[in-house]
Length: 249
Image (tube, rainbow, N blue to C red; front, side):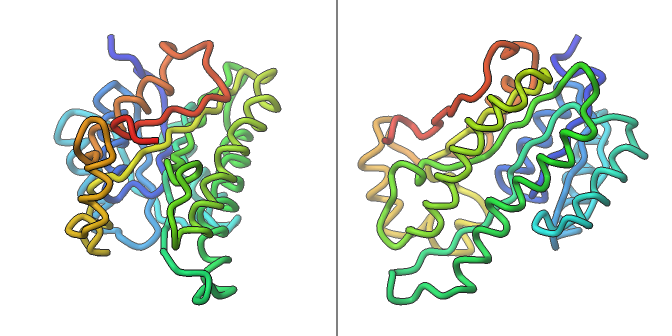
């Protein structure tokens, strides 16, 4: 029997990159997966097709996680399709690096609205849909929450907020058998990092030189840990932050 047989998982920002890998790994372990996306319907549908082709269950649902009405729609669609919710992976997020001189109100609010408010609104809805057996919330944070690189003050601050929210919600929701943990990846090669030119930059070389395992990550380095935190294998783990960064601190 697979680890997540009969479970239903919602993965935000799952049309590509880390989110897509998480969705496919959860499905491979038996979960029915809701592949959320903000704008890339084609990417989300591709992930769904791959899951179904492999014998799994999945649907795609559009929703901007920073908008409460759209999050309510996401969970209504989930309930209609699969009848329950057991796992939430808060993966949706954005990043933009900027020196202090160039930070604007828009720069600040865009990142905090998606990375922090979006995570809170989505968790709020998930909690309403978990049954008496509880559930598992896995937040995708980042090593920047503690590494705090230059030109990333706002992005780092959003991920530091995610870490604190994780710990606070774990204490708040534990009595309801809802576990809350976070995964903090190092630099991971995705479509987004290629588009931003990060994976071909000197910054990548510097990161690799500082990383004990000598390379940046891949989406499939992150997804198995999400499966672990979603499953009963981690039944007595909550409020934890798991760094998956090749040893970089």
